[in-house]
Image (cartoon, rainbow, N blue to C red; front, side, top):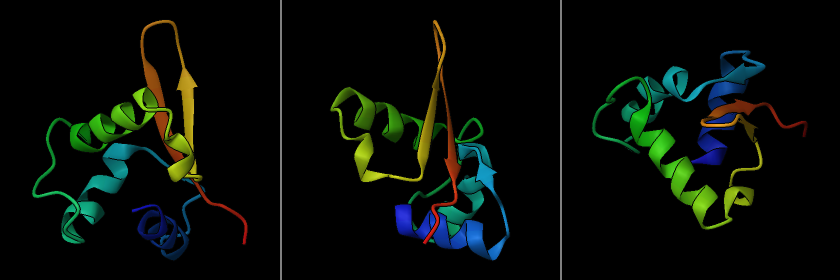
Length: 79
């Protein structure tokens, strides 16, 4: 999924993207069947990866941790 997100962001010339911005593309690519609540399926996966200390699997992911919530975004990785 990380490679697909990177390719989409490069194609669309995006420097960063939130899960809700990526969901239409990820649904189109077959990663998810539909979007719910502006990126909830992707955010749930990110939370699961965070709980398992496996965020390194998505190197283009950034987590902005607040007191209660974590705000997720994806950035372009330089080649």
